[in-house]
Image (cartoon, rainbow, N blue to C red):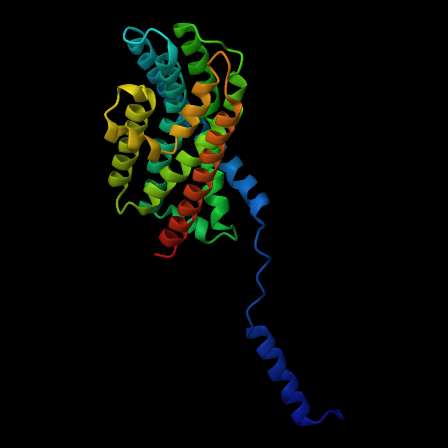
Length: 273
């Protein structure tokens, strides 16, 4: 016969039951940069087939606008503004318009619930999708800038500045597009807001500022892509003011951080509803 007291056996059995009923501990939450890399690769592979035709549309649209403006603008500062604005317009079409549609659709069909179940920081979802969409703008932006320089006789010497303009302007516009898509109550409204944002980038970014009414010049200063346009346009001059170029890029970077932070907040708000 066992020498273990009955009370001790009962306490041991109760302890095993309580331990079995206790929930298993969750794994550690994914860190930001590995999660960001995973979301970026997933978004890039998902959107490669669907978005490449639209990238061609964005590039042809910008080149067509420059051809039309060639009959109106001869050269000088106005030509620099047209080429820079048309180049950044490719970024606006993809990062602002398409991203607003994507997040609006993701919210309406319950796709946010999938991301909410993953141990992924909200910032990684927003930044990964924004970076993937902005990546599609790189070839179209360079092609538009090269064609524009050929049309208006501008130098190609400093086109390397697009390496800074594309990610900074893309971050600012992608954050804005993601916020519009996540805050819109319906996907149709998100599409409308994305189209309006791209139209604003077209009107205020491509047209020379000197030919705009004063009220539109103030509105132009509020558009995130304006500072990327100004930075690129300054490099087409005979003697670029690099301090002014750096200031414009710094403003564009600050707006990008703010817009991505707003988009992250909008993602958290939409995911818990």
